[in-house]
Image (cartoon, rainbow over all chains, first blue to last red; front, top):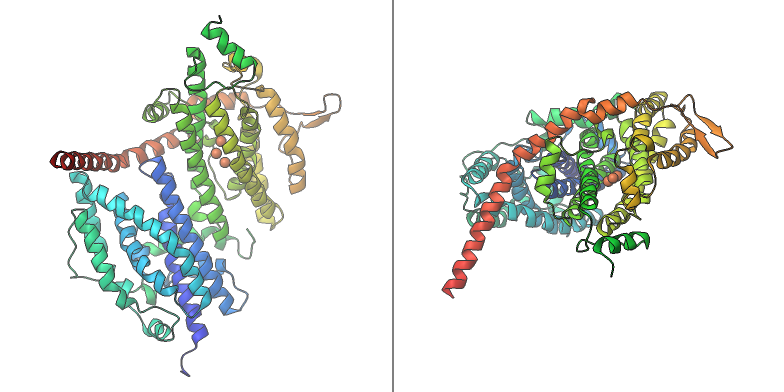
Length: 255
Length: 315
Ligand SMILES: [Fe+2]
Ligand SMILES: [Fe+2]
Ligand SMILES: [Fe+2]
């Protein structure tokens, strides 16, 4: 394994997972004061908060492994769009409430399968972060599951909005199960997860929920990829403009 | 035998709480509905100016702290709406009254949050002023409102400390950060004083509210407390005090201060501040955009109920 530096790979992996969390957390936080009613506004802020918390744990670990004095904030606030490695599904716009909830459902089901695997990692820090995140994720899934039922089997309009969101998001789910050489090697080393192996269980569970919600499981006839190599949609640049502007406007400051 | 009215006044005088099922004068009820719902609306509308900086917070820690603060404010809103509903009104009607402008919310939230330092200034001064007011309301005569205040005050104190801590970071930071802090203090200090309402002599609802112990201290007394407690806080930050007429009065044991711009106060209260229209429009937009979601929920619940009934009949 001379050409494989486990520590560097783990650092990169933690950064990727931090990117996934911060970008999705940021997106969901856009709902604050925009929710369909107060209880839901609060609940969405809570989901956002959980993802920001995860991002901080992953980034802090990545920074620690880098050992160059960088912090979680250097990772979040000073890298450009092309350096971000989040999966594309996380950066897609907030959309309407159906779009947000369908994305959450797809991601939540993924995470309820992914995190228990990561919790078995031989890297105790990653395992610990995953362990912490599992509980919250199950709670998120309970919510997104309930919303899928209510909106899928609610009114004609809500049903249509859900089906439309599902069709436009489905092609971004394939990336969740990809693995580049780095992630494959990490999985082989017992640090990472074999994501591809999670798809059958993910698909079965998502399909069951969608069917229960009277929605149709989309066809697997398109896929967009690129997050893990920094090939992003246009949305991420705008998200980072917002997120990073103040931090970048006053370099070197403590906040 | 005491009349219900006499018994009510006896309880008020004996510092017994009035509970939802107790007899109360209709004007007492109306007065409470006005005050509690106004407080609830303030919590909810306040989510906008602070929410304005969630996506731009300069560190992940600050982002998390702010998200969680705004979430708390939403929780306060919910809690207060529930207190208000114990008086026989519906949340939906209260919200409609706010959206139509018939019910008010705290004018402070009609000021724009222009810089990041405003988030610190709001936590420190606005939550700070709210606490001064609410600490006295913990002893308010209506039970559910009093209990809501006790619970909410704890979180508001936390917000105030976090806001002040944010200001310390700025005031002790780079020259640009310090300037940002000073600017925010200058813009939010006077509106924070206005949060206590008009002078006692001008206050429309004060006298009755004091008799009924809905309010426990007068606007001017509460404002004086806030003025006094803020002076050393500004000093510690090393910032200039925005009130150039501020002077210690040894005889009174309080600070004398400059006069509030009451024309500005009434202008904002009457709906013509910087953000009055924007705040309402934002609330109405979010509410309307959420209509299909609420409809779907209702429809889904109805379907579920019908299914259960069907099953029960089949069994
Ligand atoms: Fe509050
Ligand atoms: Fe408050
Ligand atoms: Fe607060």
